[in-house]
Amino acid sequence: MNKKIFLPDDERITRWYNVIPDIPNGLEPPLHPGTGEPLTPEVMAPIFPMGLLEQEMSDQRHIDIPEEIREIWSIWRPSPLVRANFLEEKLGTRAKIFFKYEGVSPSGSHKTNSAVAQAYYNKKEGVKRLATETGAGQWGSALSFAAHKFGLECKVYMVRVSFDQKPYRKSMMNTYGAEIVASPSPDTPTGRAFLEKDPDTPGSLGIAISEALEDATSRDDTRYALGSVLNHVCLHQTVIGLEAKRQLELVGEEADVVIGCCGGGSNFAGLAAPFVPDKLAGKDIRLVGVEPASCPTLTKGVYAYDFGDVSARTPLLYMYTLGHDFIPPGIHAGGLRYHGMSPIISALLREGLIEARAEHQLECFKAGVLFAQCEGIIPAPESCHAVKAAIDEAMRDPKEPKTILFNLSGHGLLDLSSYDKYFSGELHNYEYPEEAVEEAKKSLPKID
Ligand SMILES: *Cc1c(COP(=O)(O)O)cnc(C)c1O
Image 1 (tube, helix red, strand yellow):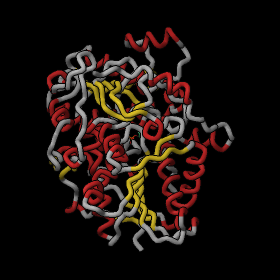
Image 2 (tube, rainbow, N blue to C red):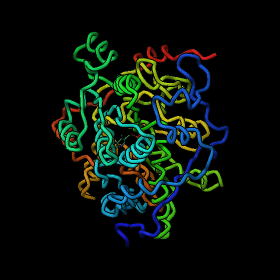
Image 3 (cartoon, rainbow, N blue to C red):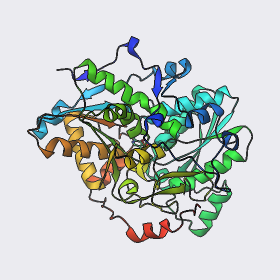
Image 4 (cartoon, rainbow, N blue to C red):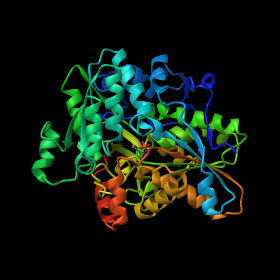
């Protein structure tokens, strides 16, 4: 049996797969936050470089990956596909469980894939500085690294709750040469407004996005970078699924179930989108996204146009959302605390091409601990959601032979304090705050 399946060097993935042309009924266009009209690339030019805007709206199925990106990726790509045989034995299941391990990247998660691509297109168009937000710190550290590789400055607005819980993420970003502040910060008008309302606010990804956007649009030399949700980010991540598909092929396997955790949707889209054509062609394969029960965007949200940030500055995206005012509880999978969801993942759910499920954090940590004890790797709290779902799939009928593929989107070595809290009983499950969400839904923008 092959424990680890590597891709030979001459089989490196050279083109991304763009799922958009394969989505039946397509995607609704993003709208201008002021006029409600479909966005043009020109309006977005102060925020993103053209190379990324073209990808955002591309109808090409395959897009070449520039050599400069693949060169930096070669530090950790192709990432290994691993057979979780020790976990299988422990569970006593006949299911084969494979995981694609993205924790081998410099920042420890899949986010570095898109960070390098984004830094590349910014650099190519003469941008000098990037502004961004980070939830749990993975995106901030990924972009700090990528920006440095291309000689760009980088400013990171880090959600307050993570800033306090994850000091080593700060050290990491500092090491890569970035500037970091806790969000809400005194550096932007939105940050100052939130601090005035509540100096102890845990912050949210929505607030941090507002701050980074304000920073980027207030300076000519600066563009904004987003670590998830957008089409171009999902596109960059498809290298994960393309590699995994080929790696399974190399050992004569085909996935029956493909699983990823869902924050903004990028690692799940990256793993699952390359399987959508098979599904459309009639293959019996299930694509399952797993979100936290405390921030249940796909399972409890509404499908509507909404802002991506809390101060209603971003374009309106058509997506599953809990309302842009929704501030999720401070659960330990910080990367999954987002009110919205990638329009691509949202549309795939609408079309019945993917499924969604929600899991509570205690059950996810329990699954993560079991996984760590069997396979050695300590999963990021976000990734524990995928581990939980993979174990459930393997145990639904342990006698049924099937092949499960899940994305181990990152390692948890900088999240050990959350594991400590789990062990000492300090973590709790948060029930879906129905009233808060009902309230936030009222703030959805009205579109005629
Ligand atoms: C950010 C993050 C996620 C969630 O983001 P997606 O865009 O949904 O992938 C999941 N896992 C890890 C390790 C992350 O860093």
